[in-house]
Image (tube, one colour):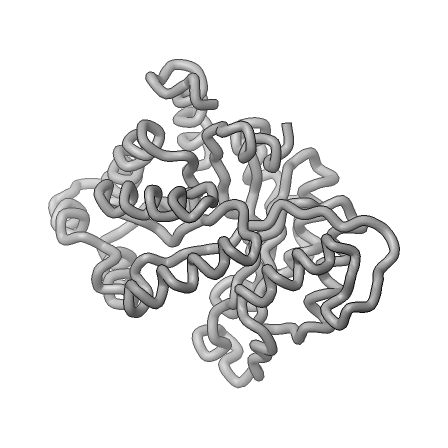
Length: 295
């Protein structure tokens, strides 16, 4: 069953994040996610995440597809104008890549080559509209294209970025433009996770709530500095007291994952190692948990 079919049939969705290599050693990336094969529904392939150079997301998506994984090709507006974006999406369609996640992208000043010039010719809402235009058989300028284009379109939502009313307005515009699923930034509060889940469902898209295991107090404080409301004091205090902060951080997000499995539609794991542990947890959810009927 494809990701699109699972979304339409109401199945609980589990996705995970894969970063292409800083170089050409793609086989090590494939090896690292093998424990999750046939357990995770699809793998997001990041697009020069945090504005740091990695192998092309499109190339890595195709390599995953050829290795038996279902990729979600992430593409941002940061590095490409509308000509290049159309070209990349047509290339993805020709290569058999159906799942895409469209986003505006991080500013280049946040990365390791801060002098790079950003593009941002269009934004994420316009990029979703562009993808739907290609599906209709036309380029953005109205010219007809040959061959079929069919995507399962996703987008992202950060409940902690900027004014809440503005973020929710943009989320609504993404769904209206054609986003079928929404993956969120990491959430560390069950109440927030449920609120976000309900908001996205009410708009007509499938919510996939982001979870990122916190490995250390330093990591948590860094995240809190970036988004003060994203990391609750309860998590900080627990990490301060924990003998093994990495294990505490893992257990913390797994508790939230249990809650999401009860009320939600999906989880997006942003992995920091722990692939074997995640594989075991997914096996439990699918086979032995009270929520196994949702899979």
